Figure 1 (tube, rainbow, N blue to C red):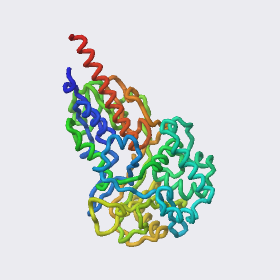
Figure 2: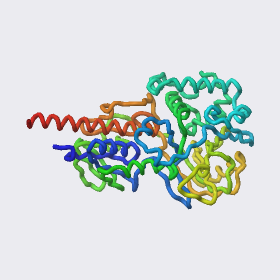
Figure 3: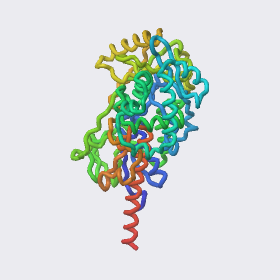
Figure 4: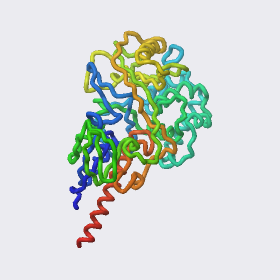
Length: 424
């Protein structure tokens, strides 16, 4: 058999599955991607609503991600950088803090913000220096502890942890207790320090769209759901059977494989609400943080503070809620509007859309940065990909997709080599 004779399927058209297809294509293989929804993207999607681009949850691309730099064309994505700082709403005042070493305009606001004490600011400089020198391999080899205990051990004040670290990283980890592994904190903190948080001009879905558009030897089967898998066959829910020499599962595998021993992945959830407003209370492209205990809102951001391929007449506000307190959608919307008014001084809010996101980030322990291709192998013909294999990040999704594809390529190469030896 030749490369072209092998039937390779990928289940899931999220970033990890698309990367797997990209690597296969780059090595001369064709493949078929099976996707349950009507388009690529997985958890990275963008809708057009009333002239605005609404991402499914407030997401950003960290430009320092090594895997993203390798596989994505940043120039074509036309990335718009968010400033390295935050606007904190406390006691009916807006306080700006940021990294003055990267943007001098943050120096005085940070020094006189009243967020944390002078010792906290020195500790941030020390943390910046420490993580700049620490490699990603070393970060993920470090002993794990909760992020909150890590910050406490570094000597940060309770005020600094409460007013900045909990709302900022709580919005990233989608849990404000900061129980997330210190490995993830160090990794994300380092990535923020070495690059920018950015949004593609056309929204986050521009990332999977770019990947999909460059796949020349890949067939997509959209609105197609897998019922079960065996070594050589994929059974769809409409009872169609597909022969497959190799299958990469770039989504949760347990629903398709009944005897899979691994536990079902637990997930963190969040809600993202979008509003149209007349003006911005945060004038620059900064993430707004709400440190008030018991508040529904974790963070806010104006996507219209960045350039977009759409030019609406008003402003778009994104609001992230990490704990909806089991409120109904209608009550949640009205409660968030009240908080925006009382905590941020906003009025004239027009509700646009609410996204309930039950599977926003995987809850993982023993976080890893890297994996070998062989570690993606479930059986001789079944391989696993997705950020659940490493850590909850776009970088991890890319790495795992690449490694799974490389594992399949090696297996096919070995098979062809053995066949050639037999026939020679």
